[in-house]
Image 1 (tube, rainbow, N blue to C red):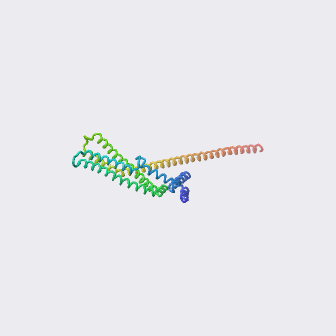
Image 2 (tube, rainbow, N blue to C red):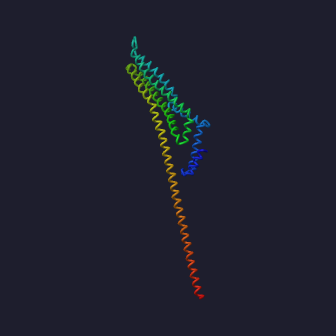
Image 3 (cartoon, helix red, strand yellow):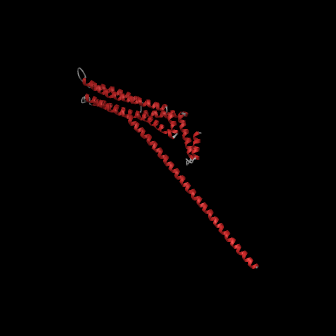
Length: 293
């Protein structure tokens, strides 16, 4: 009711070009937003569940399952590298190679676990305060808060997706190394395989750590692009409304001028006819006066 009163004052002050359409749109928008804020019929819960399931849907499995898969693959690869050492007493090369394999994998899994945990905690906190920030979308001066909240939520989702994809890449590389060792067990150097696994592990760990900044940039660009599109749409709609109003005013002015012109012409025509009739009657009266005289 306060908002309707405010809009009424704006209409009286001439601040709105299309008051009825704007009021209907604003009330409809408020109704949709309040539906999510109050979680009517579970709409908010369904929306948040859909957002949380995005990270698992893109990976094809739960994100923590990717770490379990890497752990199993690392065990197989490390055992395979260690078994390649045929030393009689102490398997020095095999031990170093397996340690390098474990070192690279543990680095990947540690960084990925930290990223997963931070992203999940951030996502849960964002979902917890979702009704507050969704309600901020109702008014223009609080809409920035909603946009920031939405950017944080999607950046958490993208972070988990990017980190999970990178962990899968590391697991696939280890699987390829296992296949290569099985094919060329005699010609494969133990330390070379271990060093390759360690270097790949370091690189993937760096990319996993950077995935958070990549996700933040992508989410920020997505929200900014959405806002720019909405702004352009609003500017275009406002321009069309102004042009329509200007055309209507122009047509109304022309119609009034034409109407006034027609009235003036009619008045002039009527005045001319009456003048001619009066002169004719005056001439007749003069003629009668002369004849009677």
